[in-house]
Amino acid sequence: MKTAFITGATSGIGEATAHLFAKNKMRLVLCGRRKEKLEELQTILSKQTEVLTLQFDVSKKTEVHDAIATLPENFKNIDILINNAGNAHGLATIQEGSIDDWDAMLDINVKGLLYVTKAILPTMIANNNGFIVNIGSTAGKDVYKNGNVYCASKFAVNALNKSMRLDLNEYNIRVSAIHPGLVETAFSEVRFKGDTARAKKVYTGYKALQAEDIADIINFVVTRPYHINIEDLVVYPTAQASATMIHKN
Ligand code: 8X3
Image (cartoon, rainbow, N blue to C red; front, side, top):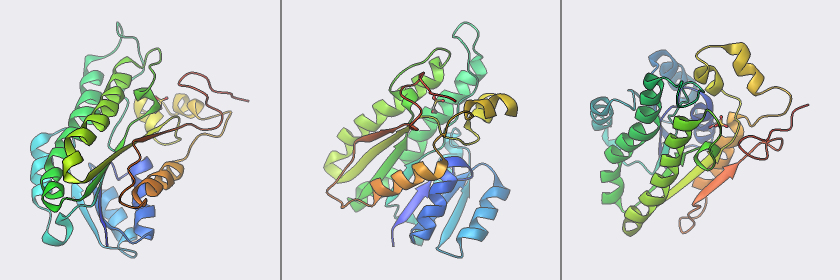
């Protein structure tokens, strides 16, 4: 039985991936900030597989380190790390953007991914086995107006995905990224700070990707034979041709 460790498991792509992995009988370590949501997932998914939940904030390095240090023997040997936790905060020009929003995005999307990876790697290296899947974004491939720091954080994920693979090559560790375009999750509600009407507009007039679509692709990537390492996959909804071109009805 493979053990998968998922950050940001309490919503969106992370939650959908947890459900699919449970169905496929992977042992799960589910991480997030919301205790009640983690408990709810544990109750549901424990019916299908072994589940451990860890409550911490990826952007707090001590919390990350301490939480991962508590992993019991049967959950310690992580085969698959899904670096999924990430958010957008605000959508504004550089001159108008909020420094607090910038800090949050860089702390969660970049530093958080690094803290978690650093804490998990010693076991993967010792085992000479492991798979890290970084959830980036099409915003890490192309910039768009007002995207500035969010795009920069996802360009950093893209760079880290490539460089981790170089550093970990000699340890037989696979490193992949998935870069989704518009996925209909709580993403835009967080970006627009609870403005649900504005968030909803992002996903109307066309069929956006669903969290389950990306979970399915993650599952495809991690279930290839071990000699196959997909560098990355860029995934758009059919109606989206680029970061800024979306055909809406
Ligand atoms: C999510 C896609 O287009 O909002 O990362 O940047 S986008």
